[in-house]
Structure formats: C-alpha cells, structure tokens
Image (cartoon, rainbow, N blue to C red; front, side, top):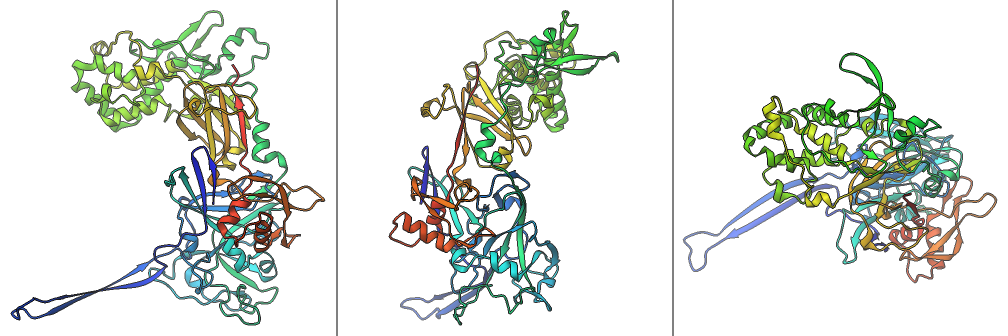
Length: 637
C-alpha cells in the first residue's frame, strides 16, 4: 500500500522476514575429484563442515541508535488521546526475527503495551540468570540460552499483575496486524531509504494522565495447541488474578496526554510570530530603536584597558540583507569595532565575529597547524588564495579551490553555514526566541566574511604576513554573487514532538492552500537541531513561503478526535490515502481502558471500504493513519 507526496511514496508492507532466523546453522560442502580415461590418480572425496550462529535480538535493551522515533515523543505533553502509540525501528527485520509461536514465523514477537499512571509497573534491571523460571507468584517460561548469552547479561523486566495484563495484551490476531514496514520510494519504485519497522499499540492514552509505553518481548509465549479453544491465547502458566507475569522490556518511554492545544496543527497555528524576525521591542526608547529594530541587543563589554561598558551586538541571523563586503583582511578584531557618538556605544558585532573565527580555528589545533603550514608553502600565491577563502561558499567551486586542502575547504564551508558557531552568538538574548515562536532571518554575509577572515588570520604574525594577505576589492565569485541565504528558527514542542518534520521553502509569497509550483522550491543548505525544541534551517534564496508538515513515514495512526459524550469513530481512508466522508464506530475489547479490538477494527475497515480480501498489517496501517496536516507561513516583508 502507498500514500503519495510530491514524487515520493510511502509504502506499507506487511512484514520483512530476515534471510535466516535466529539459531545455529551447519553448512556441509563435499567435492569429489576424479580423472577421466585414467586410473593413475585415484578418485578422492573432500568434505568440510562449517557451523555458524545467527544472532537475532532477544533480551538486551535496545540502544537509542537502533530506534528511529517513538510517538508520542518521550517526555512530551500533547493531545494524544486519539493516537495509537508507535515505535519505529531502524532494523526492518527486527519484529520478525523471532515469533510468538514457533509454528508461524510471520507473527512478530514484539508488542507495545500502554499503562496508565495507576497501572504502571516498575522496571527492574536484573541479570539473565535471574530471568530463569521463578517460583511463587511471578511467572516466566522456561528458555534455553543461545550462543553468546551469559548469566551476567543485563535484562530489563516488568512484572504485571495478570488481572491487568489480560485486559490490555493484544491477541495473536491483533499482534499480526500491529507490525508493518515503511518503505520510502520514488515514482519509479526506487527505494530512497532503508525499510523501517513500525510497531503499533492497541490502546488509546487517557486524557489528563501520564502514560508509559513498554516494548515487550513475547517470544513463543502464545499457546501452540488448540485445546478447549485456547489456541492463539497468551500462556499465563496457570497464574491467578493477583499473580505477576514477568515480561522482558526492550525499551520504554512516558508522555502526558493534555488538551487539544498541544497537537501539531494547534501548536503551529498559535506560534508566536511577533516580531517576524530576531529583534527585541524598542518599548518607546527612541535612541535605541534604530538598533533594536535591526536585531541588536545590548551586552556587557570588557574593554582591553579593564574598563567595563555596554555595547551593541547583533547575530549573523539578521533582520535584513547586508550590503557590506569585507574587501581586505584585518590585523585585529578591534579594527572592526564601530562607534556611534549619538548613543556613545560601540557596535562589536563584526569584531566578535572575527575573533570567534580565529578562536574556533585555534581551538581546532590540527587544522590551525595545517592552515599555517599551507599558507607558508603558498606564500607567493596568498593574494589569490585569500580571494578564494574569503569569498565562499565552497559548493560548486572545485575549479577555483582545487588547490585548497580538503580539511581547510571543509572548515571554511562549514563556517559559511555558521556550523560550529555557539548558540549564544546566533541568539544572544533568550527574548529573541521565546518558547513556541518562529523567526525568519537573512544571513549577514559581512558577518560571515569577518568570521572567515578571523579563521584565516591564523599564521598572520608580522606586517609582511598581513601584506601578503592583502586583497583587492573584487566582486564575489559567481556562485556567491547569485546567492542569498535566508532561513528560520523554530522553538516549539513541534520539533521534539514530530521528529519527522517536512520543511519546504518557496520564493513566492502564497496564502491559504494555494498550489506552489515545484520550480519555486528552495534548496535547503542546512537543517540542524540546536536543542530538543529548537530547529535551524537555511535556504539558498529568499524564503517567502514556508510549509511545515509531518513526514509520511512518521505519521501516527489513530482514531478521529475524541469528543466527550459521543461514540469514538474512525473516518474511512482508501488504501491510496484518499480520505472518505464516511466513518465507522471503533470496537473495543475494553472501552473504559481504551483497548481497541484490532482484529474487529480491521474487519470493519475492510467492510466499510468494500475490500474483497482480508486485511494484512499493511492495509490496516494505511487505513488507520491520521491525516498529514500542512501549516503554511508567509514571511512578512
């Protein structure tokens, strides 16, 4: 199944079996050698036997780098009462590397269990030797060690009362529908990413509570034989209602379910955009207004003579396009300081940029030494080299910069995009970027020039060194003269809450949901998370329209927004992603606990869509996804 975006398709695939299941394998090879028409060399047979082991995941906790994303995000507050929790795993075969029943390898061995605050089990870290079948009221089945497993291996377990577990644990039929594969492809069917495995939960979070989700291992814990209708049920090993069932937890996270103001649409539609750029309000201070409107902030400034004062500083994320160019190298940062007699204050912005470039380069000692040695070896050519280094970016400049060592070229390319620049240089005052705010900016090219010149100043010691670095006032190279870099900073729970955020910038201002021609789309030069909630993005060109949406592979599954006092429903969605106007009532195994009957839900979706075949996990996921909202912003002139 697939749902389409612009030239991109997200395919939903039922399962992805590993090439070999976990276990020990023996390979036997035999070769017979004999000659034709001669008995001089007797016939000989050679044989070789090789034993190897396929190590599928089993008991160890999952490492963070094996997880692509979880939803709802860990530690997040949001309106998730209609969302089924999910986890996306980078290893596409992981859910099928073992099974809940040895007679059916297509059944996944992992399940997501959601616990409300009052039910939450306390995870315990134990050694593998302690996981062996326990006596008393804790139940865990017999198992055999596999190759490489040792008594001292660390395992995380939760002990869940049977009375709770039997109300929330998915059935065998449900488990078969709750794991699937996401595959990103283009229109020609070519894969654009590694397959990602997604595991869905079967329970809706409760509004106003903290929920905890555990990914638990259920390897061969479902009954094989059909006896009195027990086939397909979890084996509770004769446990009573108050006995504890021990489960291995591979990963867990918690989140809080609050009001609807914390969903994707609401957060972005209420985002703070006043002002539209990184600047402080003037608050009636007319002498300071001209500086504050340009993004300046007053900062404490210690002068070289020991005196202290207040000076103006603005970051490279400017409120407008800079017209200045650095036409010659400077010997020291102080030469770039500006003094305003009307306010009696210095502007130290470009001096700080120059000094920062120098300090960052000196801090990278191997690079500083390489720059120094390279400049010494190229002393006669520094006139030309300075032009190449100062007037970047290095993208598409291999012809002019082919003589520059790779490490140096990469360093200056990173500086062009303000990489390695500390956050407080980009946002020098927290009031410039408050929580739940969006700010657009232009990159101040003169600030970047000063940053790069400071970096290139390593090795300038004498006046002769400076003279060797002197350059003429030349226009920027073709790649730079045509380039304007703009971008935005987003400080919001949306950043941490929806890691699969799609970003599209366009050169034309567009309102509403009007179509934007693909040729007007801007190239993203840099996209970085500066913190859990802060996203930085640079575009090649002036961004006038910004679209933010949820990435197809990370769109969550769920039911329609829940309204108090009404039945919980799910709008029908065709297998190609097209939304229908009809909806169905959601069936529950336990409505008070929010536990959905997944098998019955799939059957109702199938009937509602008039599909002539049984649903697999792929069809179920494709029809259960929530819509992927797109929120549009237009930069103000």
